[in-house]
Image 1 (tube, one colour):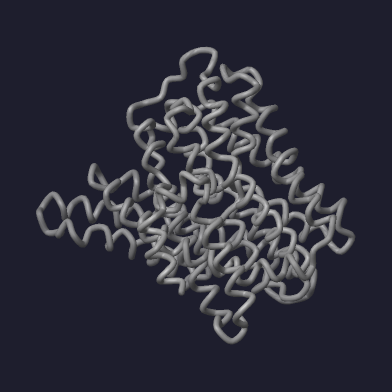
Image 2 (spheres, one colour):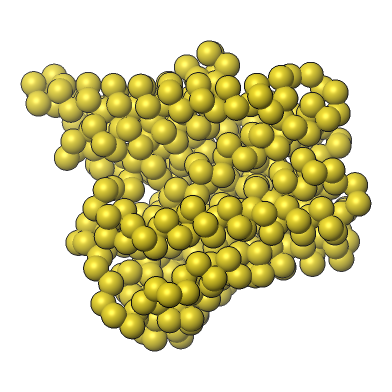
Length: 409
């Protein structure tokens, strides 16, 4: 059924998207439908779900990091510093404090886990904004680059929160100090693997050793290799995949983007399966554990927790308040949050049940709210979002904002 749904989506996706039905909406709905007729305990093994979601996140982290070029970062360096170095930490802190205040069962680590897991954005849920030419290229580029980097940046915070929660429960491990060592190892291994792999592919192409048809699968395997090597040396695999993507993008040469595009396409296919599994597993959790606190937290997380920091840090720039609010609203929560919730289940078991319910509720609300609002809001407000002064966006940035994330949009 899932394979047939993927084929059908490929055949009619453009038509469904014009009706504001995005891939996450369709495949979460499919998963929810399957949850009513089959028992996921007998159909899906826990390790299988874990493997699919983690591998998908590895490819997404690698391709997102490799796609962001120096030209895009230089064009609006100040803007990205504001969003990633100031607004993102503020979002984590606000989500952390809100979770601690609303849920009595959370200690400081579980509250931090929820705040950090729901901080990264996923442009795939608002792809109609990223690809809509009515929205100024500067706005599309900002949303695109931010979503490509914030999941990798926030991963260390999630790892530290999981380590702290596990240590507080007496589940062993080295606590936060051990987690910090894992992060440092992941960074080092990722830089070496991605830099060496990119340079090797570039040399092989120059000497005509590499077949163009297999260069894309080589990049795909490189992302998994960085992840697996890091795990083998007790490092953090996700951080390794992210830093490997950054290093690969710097060393792979002019053919690198084409190879990264292959990784994006593969991650897009895997993402459809992940969204189906999410609907199959998460919808029953939300239905069974639904409470007003979960819904209120989800709504505040998608509005105040995200939009207030963005509006504050963008004051003093050449973006109007309307544009800042538009950027703040289109901070949908997606694949990274799903994987972080799964990691919480693996690391903490039943103790993370409420935290997982909080994360999944927020993601489900985001899938619907951002999926259905992307095209209408882009069409309604896009033409009025132009900066007060022209924002310098390189041709590469404009091109990237058009073609990135189409695979899951």
